[in-house]
Image (cartoon, rainbow, N blue to C red; front, side, top):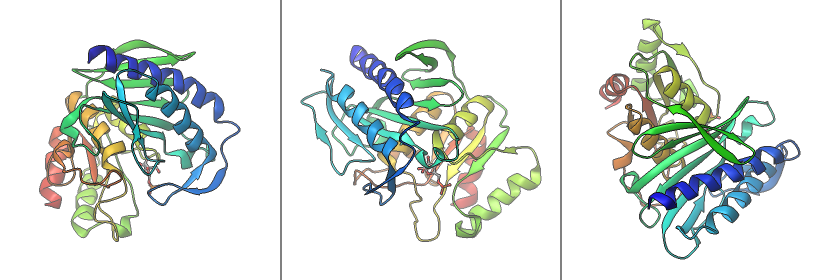
Length: 280
Ligand code: P6P
């Protein structure tokens, strides 16, 4: 299992080099929509193809699924790997960070987060970095398709940033009140960049909370459990933080649909506890 998981993230690092190199000429929208009904960019399709190609070629991988594909790709026997191939791709035309989110499950998909044996993400920022959670969380620099460890990651004890997705007018009154209490306390600085991976990385680096809540018309929020919620919950909990779907750890949330959604909150345990009390 250990070799298999390492092979997965080596393949993701190799694909990341191709994805990053392919971004400049793929910032336009296609006329396709993904299973979540979102219009996809050429870069979404390209990233998905590169990741699927490299990951399904691994002996350790038995299944591949992504936000861009209706079903699971059968690759024989072994680990089930999920990808959000280009998280936050709508940030491409605006020149903001995007990323690749990876979940490595030791079960058939769709699977609960507790079936994860590893998770991580690539951040295409000023430099390309990767965060991988297994027994602990390690950050890597990704260059020329290879990854070099640069240090361990732990959620800082003191929270300092917050950011929540969706329109304020679409939040529940209880959640709106919770955010208002954070803002009136004046302790946290707003950091919301429109790509989950970038916002989660801020929380891992500075402490605080990121979330995408239930919104009017979508009680399960916007983010996908298999491809976004579970992997970032695994990373943040492994880094000493906490996750919640509003009721409890995202990793305990039942997984009945491959493209099912979940409210997502990740960050310092104290802040997540306060949030759960506020929205219960
Ligand atoms: P909004 C990107 O489309 C994404 O799936 C996440 O990466 C991000 O956190 C969220 O949606 C942003 O959504 O509604 O703020 O544009």
